[in-house]
Length: 117
Image (cartoon, rainbow, N blue to C red; front, side, top):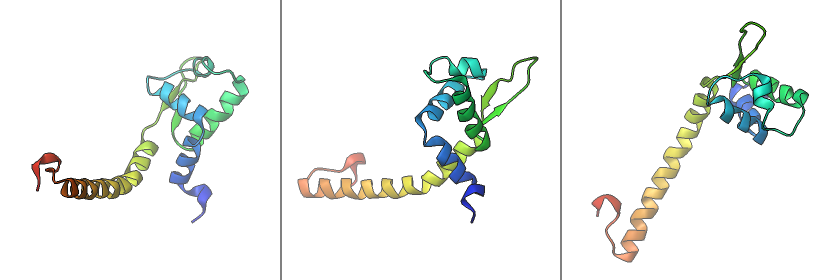
């Protein structure tokens, strides 16, 4: 499979940058213009625009048109895809932690959480 056409890879690549994650955190509060998004950052507007282009390419944001403004909005679908992918590993780790919890309680002779014995 071509990695550039793989939407999960594009999403994870976009999320790898802390500035882009901060932009998404801002957009989780509601739509914002480029100037509003750029306000807390000490980088240039062209740099913010490049970050927005990456986020838009990954489907994580969309840009609307309202008069002369182009507000950016968070798009949740790619994040749901990442959550679904991580869910398989979450189940694995939860099972591993449950087994470890049982073993630790067994060797310390204490009842495990939830009252199971």
